[in-house]
Length: 95
Image (tube, rainbow, N blue to C red; front, side):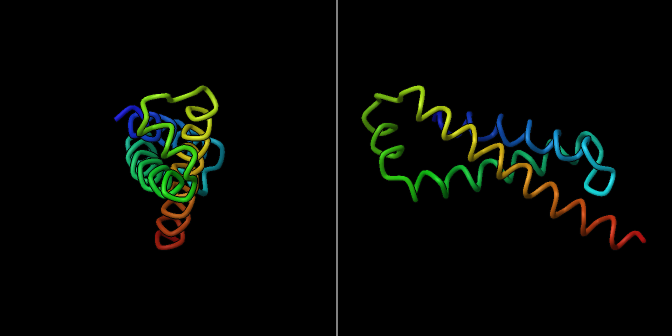
């Protein structure tokens, strides 16, 4: 459960960061947060499946600092990537 929360929070932060860094990707504050949450949750779960050591640590309850950092990076990247994609599509369609 902790890893999902880390992914969601990091994704929201990544979405906000990308949205505010470039007007091309900005979906508004709520849009950036929502797309960041979705992207962080999805990519964070995929990263957990692809990294067996993170999954093993999460299941054993021995979640280390490196595991938390890897989840935060995966979630933040996922949120940033999805926000950038959705923002680019939205702004391209509006033009």
